[in-house]
Every structure is written in C-alpha cells, then in structure tokens.
Length: 153
Image 1 (cartoon, rainbow, N blue to C red):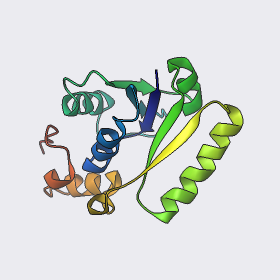
Image 2 (tube, rainbow, N blue to C red):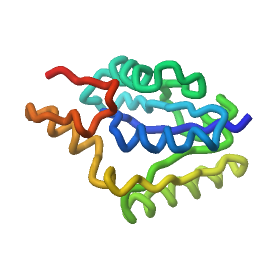
Image 3 (tube, helix red, strand yellow):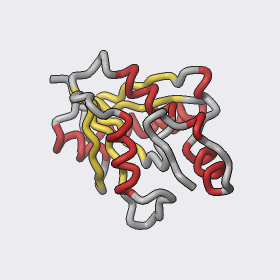
Image 4 (cartoon, one colour):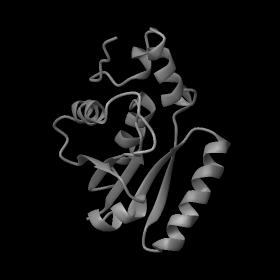
C-alpha cells in the first residue's frame, strides 16, 4: 500500500492545498493530511476547526485521513507507515526550502521519499498567510477556499 503524508499547518486549508491532494490521489492508496501542532505558535484558526474543515472538503473519500501531530514529520511517517511525503511547490523559493527539508528527512529516514507537485498556475499566488490576512481584516476570501469550506466572520 502506497501511503503519502501531506504535512502543514493548513491555517487555513486553501484551494491550492486541495488541488495538490486531489491530483496526488491517483498516485497513492492513502493520503494522510497531517496538521502540525506547534505549542510555541498560536494558530489563527482553532486546530479542531481546521481538522473539521479538511474532513468536510474530502467527505466520503476513503483514501483521505486527517491527523494532528506534534513531532518530526518523518517520525509520523514511520508511525503511520507512510513511504512518501507530499509537498506542493508554488515558487522557486518554495523549491529551495522544500529541497533542504526533503534532503534532511532522507538523511534521517532513507526509505521515505519526498514527492513534489507543482501548484497549478492559477493557484500560485494563493498562500494561507495572505488568505488569513484577508479574513482577519474582513475581506471575502471564499474564492481561495475549497467549496465545502465556508468561514464565517
């Protein structure tokens, strides 16, 4: 069974994230969307809300699991028997950052491969940080969010 882990804070989960997961579904038997929890960092949206939103987006898709974790990503991969880490790339800066992390992860666990998906051109500008700011200041961010994920302000 080919299992991929898609880690992130997903604060919030965007159409870019959804696109990467949906496009990767044909390659993997299961994708675990893993929401990292950092006790030193306060998320804008409550963790429980982020979990529920993602579950709503992929409701009925048995190949998708949602998990919260507070550990190294590779350690969660080992625990969940995931052989792949799924990452989306929007820019060359993303690539440089993700390449370094991927190489470090491989040094720690050579059996775990990082798989990169290029973001669709129409999603390249969509970041959780910008979407969060739009929401924080009362703007309408709905075009940057999955259809089944409605945020009330």
